[in-house]
Image (cartoon, rainbow, N blue to C red):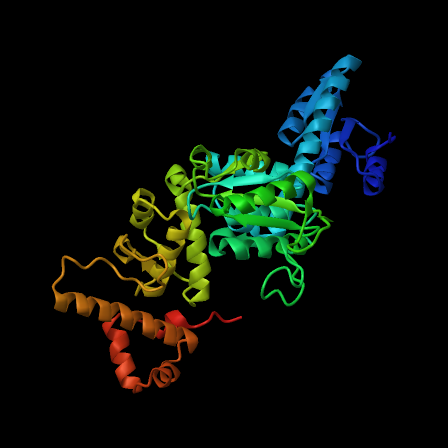
Length: 436
């Protein structure tokens, strides 16, 4: 489309969304620089090419600084213009696709907790973005605690299947016989105890996504039936002669070496190739140390708000300590460490001494550090101190920092609770909810 002036061009923009604008600098009403500014404010993804005469070269250079893609001095060759426009079309397409994906991520919790700017994580997130809105089968690999389930959630959330609930199957948690009936369902009378028809998880995921978490632990007999589902796109419930067509996007995850399991005859090679259409590798925390401060700050913000301690921050040396520490449990371990630190740190700044010991049970929400260097009496006192700080902190949080209410909750006199608070450096103000 063409426009006789800059203002006319702006009016056209409101009704017609171009990919590229090719404009002169000197025009009857507003000049090309003003038009460029207006176009960028309207939609920064639109690519703008400036045409200029010799006398306005300095304005064209200024236009490049203001965001123009390129400028051409008159007279110019049509071939060069068309070449530049083709590049602009591709640039605009990429910018809008990137904008669309970022908006989806924003609407779904910024990649569902996958936080970081490292190259390895960026590669994983880029692959997620590119295959999310397809039906391709994806295998997510990585150590325990690297965010494999979060990656699966992102794949689902960014797909056209997002309106439907994603079904997650914890494969190791189910015995072989139960796993088969849970996945494929069964008919009444199929076996002893089958008193009614049961819909399997694959059928429940029809039109949506199913995540087979830790698929390496699926027994061979179930692997065979799963292979048929991937090949034929159909299931056959136990006790039924006819197959049922399904439309399910399959995502699998594992922290095990599938190639080794194939060599040992524990995993079907043909199933592996069916699952391994696209592989997403989630990096271990030791591979992305530059992301540790970002992830730690995210969890600090999260738990400081949860426990009413919004003014908390890390000391500079604490971040160095976190970066240099070995994280066998990866992001999950880091998350637990930050949660405990927020809960147990007495002041508003977290120092390295406030970071829990490495010898902490990841499945226990209480901090139990290694105490082999202490006497029995000293260790007992340390455990009592940890318990007291945790217990009183939770009581104060539950009562919005109201000491009287917290004392009643604990079955203590107000003065007794205040003495304990002074002993362990707890302040009621740190547990009050922020005012609206």
